Image 1 (cartoon, rainbow, N blue to C red):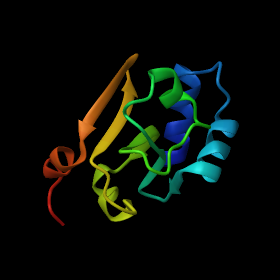
Image 2 (image 1 turned 180 degrees about the horizontal axis):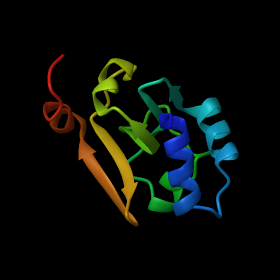
Image 3 (image 1 turned 90 degrees about the vertical axis):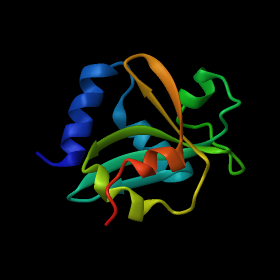
Length: 114
């Protein structure tokens, strides 16, 4: 199964009320969509000052924001660093019903150096 297929299957199981196609479209227009044999990722620039509802809305973006929100991800974590277009201090995720903000430098330290 490809990373995209894994991500689509996870999305269908956890958010069936939100069709995936419009979410992907929002990220194509206002964020990042990476689909390679190693990974699939949807991310966009946001502000950590926003409400959780704004951050979870794929159409909200902030060109001056201080974080990248990873909406959906599947695949090899080691394939991420070369794809990061420029550094932002924070990265956010929404996992298991909880919104999380992480320092990007801290997260990158946990990845093996290539």
